[in-house]
Length: 113
Length: 114
Image 1 (cartoon, each protein chain N blue to C red):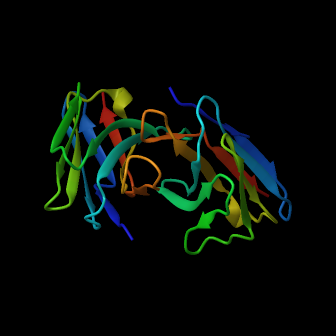
Image 2 (tube, rainbow over the protein chains, first blue to last red; image 1 turned 180 degrees about the vertical axis):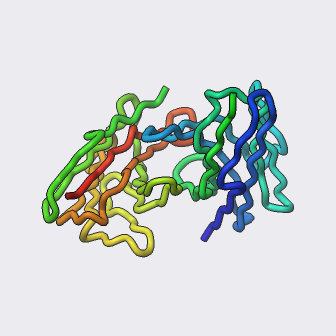
């Protein structure tokens, strides 16, 4: 089965700096990679996703890059704000729907004002 | 957008009793729902895949007789934790296919077994 690894487990940055979270996956058949933000006790919220036919996707301060050859993908948050503080999970799936996600272990991001 | 309603949000039960958690897709039909479990400060672990009208598929290590899943309609899936014990205390969350692709998560259920 698929195995997703995520690093770092915790990350602290100063407000305004950038944050980068990296994930690797094991199954080359995976082709959909969403990122979720989860605040304490709440449901995960999809913040950005990328499909395997795309190398990079950007949405305002958030961007995701994918390297299919190396089987890794990264989340980049620029100009971080205190409200970005949360746990972020990467995931991999064989398709955008109909299949379960395999989640990374999560990164607790703290943005220091 | 797609909305998944999950109830209850919090439940405290005595050891040995059963608890039922419901997930409803409010504005779309969900042929497939997924049930996850999340321990504090840990990732979401898939427990089972629920398909409408058929038996759920459980992940390795998940006791199907303890965690009963029923997906009787295209809008409702239920997870029943039978004979709950303190070690079953966790955050349980469901997800379903969203109309725009990807998945929509329910709001989660915090189960505490005392």
